Image (cartoon, rainbow, N blue to C red; front, side):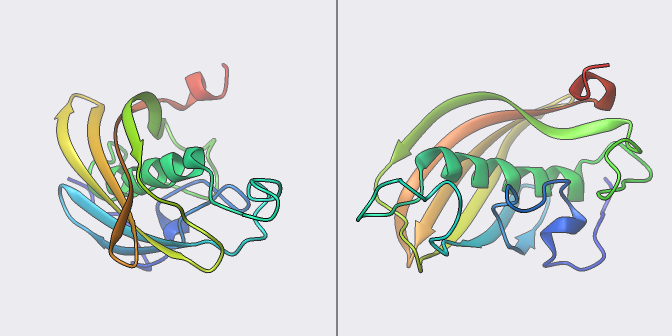
Length: 163
């Protein structure tokens, strides 16, 4: 297993995503099967504008993406098939890590609003080859607002780039 990180809490050490689409802000912990990250809802994010006027809430699709990005951290940290991994130059890497291939289910039980801090916990349920099955949970102040199951895979970077 590979262990890639220079600054443990810095999400950009693990993912290619950058603002405005980098949705998680800090890696709290990561081990062989579990990753915990944090995200804050500022209220000025492009996807909150108009969702909904007078009652801004974080869209469920963004919560799904937060759990997917968190799972990507776990893959990059513990199941990265590359000897050298460069998050600044995606064309350098042989593989694109953690590409979403299936959302099995998602259940939304509450809302995240501007000012809320989210804790995203993702657990690796099964790994078969380069396919990863995950279960996610997002909480705000200890209250469950979303749970989901989804599948990610590692693919050749050339496939992602359309080559």
